[in-house]
Length: 351
Image (cartoon, rainbow, N blue to C red; front, side, top):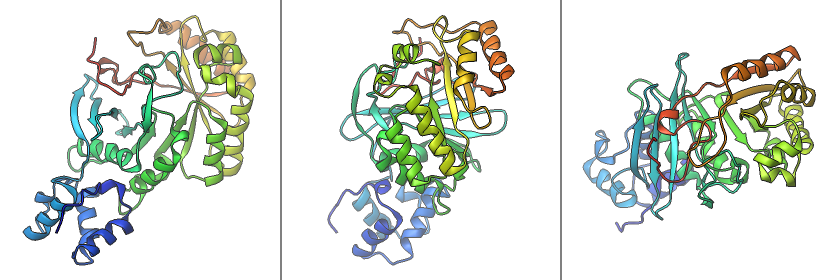
């Protein structure tokens, strides 16, 4: 058998079956191996003990010693239990992914979809080093599996948020097959409604999600209540505008029946006043919208500041007073630069 260098996670179940059958494996071997990887969190073929030594050697010849194609360059853990990993792919490019845990026993994987980001949001670390390329379906799925293996037995990931580096709606062709594997019963079996795809607000991308009639939640990073402020912090807004973004989000709700979350990073002196909150309330469908308020997480190279607790409370109260459902996302992982807006395509140690 000649070495073919397949990437395990690039193959769908049927493609994986075809590769094994073509290389002389019995038909039952493919689902058996997938159970080892997805249900038993075993990533080394040598540890799949109910598979013959010859078949394990043949699997190593086809895929390498493990199911992973990337190398784990760094793993850091914060005081609150958040873990961040840095993966380097064979081409030398890198991405970060994060495992978050909370008091409700949610175990959430935060996943990247691109190496770098082209959106250029001026408050976010992810785009500081520019955009390089899309991640493949296998590279996206590998992040999820790696985070799952960080959990002690018998724990598994319960939620996924596609909020890492990159704009997910510009890489749906790779993201959606990866999520199909992560949510399938013979994959990681994560509930469809426990997956959230976050977009900076690309109307065409949201419409593609709407047309696909996806079972996932949609989160839109709005971050401002008027176009002038939004364009100041999200330059790409000049191509779309808030009105077009909200219209696309409404189409998503009308098609899927799933309420849309609007993420709003509070930046001191930029978008955090009670007047901003009232303008935001006037924009939204108060019966269907949820606002996720996120006090800004500092990035050393950037000038923006986190608002005071008093300003945050006043902003939230103004929204609630206008009849908007509000959640506040408190920081997790900021001690290791793993909080919202702090992920990059290369490792930076904590300050």
